[in-house]
Length: 138
Length: 208
Length: 287
Image (cartoon, rainbow over all chains, first blue to last red; front, side, top):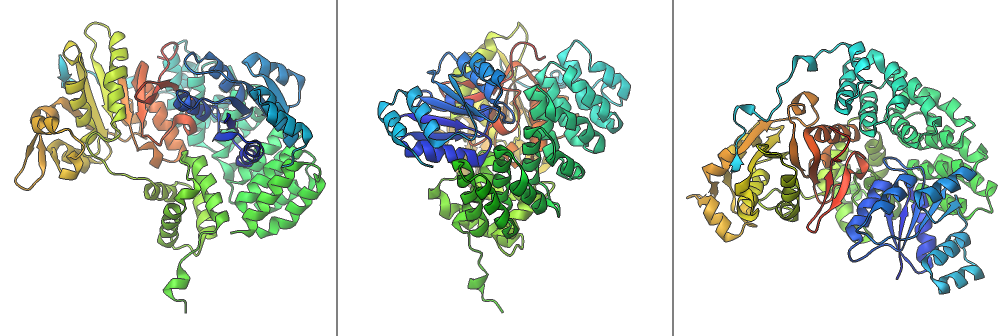
């Protein structure tokens, strides 16, 4: 079962992502900022690595871009796709996300179908992608 | 070899005279010293000069080292006061995420002092400033908190600001907010996240 | 007139969720649904102890207190606080299997390796470190190692220097170490060897007081376990900054197993060793 780490300082957003992605059949873990996310990556990378990261941008202590940059520097943990989800809609943020090493960028609040479909594509989960294309509700 | 006692306090640094009662303006100068450790100590010792907080805030964007910035923010947090608030509010708009987040964190620790600025902040054109302000309301004990939250729920045009208001409403949990929560839900009827957040707020308000 | 039964506060599902999120946000400690009974029981105790009428009133008080005393009491209630020899042993394993070798590799000739244990409490931690180094670090005879240990409470420091321990406190020690470093007393307590007491430099330190901590420099490893969890946000930051300044570049910090720098400071880098995850002061740049 694919494992997803949801990183966001807002509890409601974490719950929302957990519900939607969890209902799609994936295992969800949470972190409230980039630092905690890195710790969970380190703690779990040996036997339970993450297959996908869903990451907010504005977070205290360590923001989303910094987290992705640090993640990409790590030699001894398996890398995984990063979906950035943020309120900022400017074009430069999509570039910044890419520069940091993320794979794609969604604008908050993400629609359930969009979230699942994008996650499924990044995870290479064909079944989930098909289901999502057929229609998903929150 | 092996375990050795620290005899004569050899390893413990002698406290130099310069560590104490250093002149405030001397400390401000030391904030520009090429040595990182010197700058950090100057930032720390400025806590004894509460009259220099405006200057300290002004130095923040000029400081490249995160470890020094962190100590500067800590000093500002310890001192608090109106000068700190007015010095940090402009940083809420900074392009530099580290400065912005540092300002948010520091101001979040001074809710009573920020209270006087909330009316203005809630009308700020910058969405992130309004979101920060709403998050602050969760930590603020003030007779107008419910009013401010209600206002954002009923009137703010931006979905993410309303989302932040719903999140705080869920924690603040006042029955008086139920109509405003309903209003938010109705205004963003097609947004599943707002529906989700409104459900949650109602559950938490009514379930307690 | 209310009866005792009617007075007992009730924790609803919504209350539990609110509390859980708040506690996770503040401390990083997560309670899953399975811990409901554990949490409810202690919440009710705190509600009653603070004279609150119900959860809602208690929660408001908790969120708005200025100094964080009730949060501390709450954290105390929710966590297990016992101290004993070889507590959270995996960190001592990490010390002798990984951290000491890395520190030694950077040691210049004549430089001592310095370890700081704070709080010392009644001494179990610094003495555990000493025993581990003597027994489990192959290179202990090649280097001079200092163990510094501090606590804010002078009574506890005195107790540490007396070195008398209960059977419960030494229960986790392998028998050979117990027999080598302790002597059983007539009253069933165990007295630690004078050599170990003399090997540790004890001092009274308030980690929140910059004037106390500025004396500590060139430390290679700090053990600060299950202390910061009881501090308010600002004091925790200050403590983390004090530790940062006390460390040599490349030095390590070990926090308690349920503690994390993630809510405190971004100054440190996470290092994952086979035995434990610890924090490190960056090597370059920061002096």
